[in-house]
Length: 357
Figure 1 (cartoon, rainbow, N blue to C red):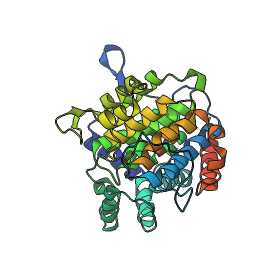
Figure 2 (spheres, helix red, strand yellow):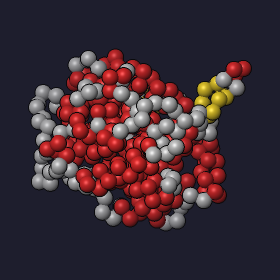
Figure 3 (cartoon, rainbow, N blue to C red):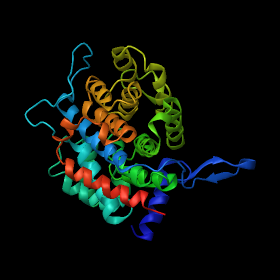
Figure 4 (cartoon, helix red, strand yellow):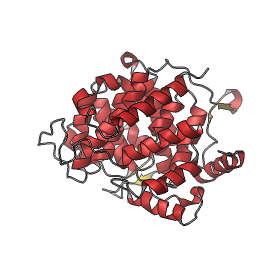
């Protein structure tokens, strides 16, 4: 990314998100803002990096055949592939690989390069979201990346940012900036941008946390604070427009529902559509019910209905980031499309990230 593009990107971020520049969070003595620097958590293993990417892909592939179905908690869904193309991945994983390879090829999250690669991807992509397709059409017509994004609070931005959480696992300032830059070519809505930053933070936190030290409530509160920083707005819910909430507040509600009746929690409260106010908290709910059992996390996600592939991809990413690829169902991983490519991307991201001084 050229210096001019980087400066323009930061200007656009400040203009459109109405938050402090990435890295400016909290207040020091006397109310003075303090700048975020490198975070100090444990050194992640390569297995955890592979777990994040492969777990997301596995959730995507398992959930794709169920996408659009109505919630049915009264039926059993075994943890196995169904349909005529077992292991097939969709846009969630395809775009995640684009982002991983831009970071590896360019050294940074370059939104111009992402815009170019998305225009190629749309010709063969699976399960393309409407907001993303409309934005890509604008990009193809010459609209610049910082003006092309759709005014949609869908989950199409958050679903692809896991590689940023991995690559920038110990640098919140750069992670926040790059996650927002990754979102903007297709999604211009502040909640969509906030959700991308939240998902990158989630991955960064989990890969650097020892499983035995994981604290679900603290994890959710940290993510909710990130969401508050980027988009504190209270938006109407789709199932009940008279009810309004923010992304941060909705996530804060998740721990209280972990032991609730699953059908009531999802059908009557969180819901599981492509609106990121629904799908990201629902994925958190699936993960927090079984944080140390990726198979059960994925099984839970298959039952929620509606945007099942993205919910399962989110949930699988979180579970894989905490537990590692070695704890994912091996017989299913062997069937995931592009598994070798994802493994190679994860290995290269780990070498680039953990090998830094």
